[in-house]
Image 1 (cartoon, rainbow, N blue to C red):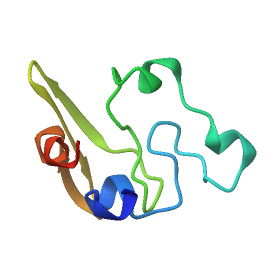
Image 2 (image 1 turned 60 degrees about the vertical axis):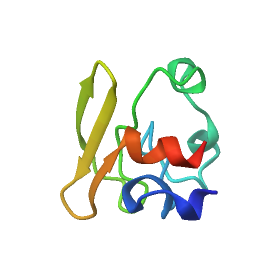
Image 3 (image 1 turned 180 degrees about the vertical axis):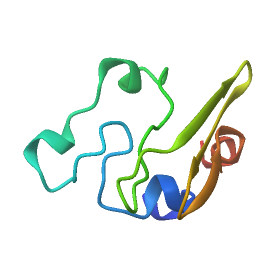
Length: 79
């Protein structure tokens, strides 16, 4: 499933909510808001850079300077 997500969200080794490498024991933990689906991703999964995030009434978009844009509406087809 992660391979089907847009590059900034699913094709990497970094936690999209904390920016820590997934190999690191602290990288596996998720904030409570993210577990509830209330928090948009803040870090790029590919490079760990902080992304520019805009929250809208109907969702969010997140943009990595290197890996492009991901939109929550793109993820609706993944559900």
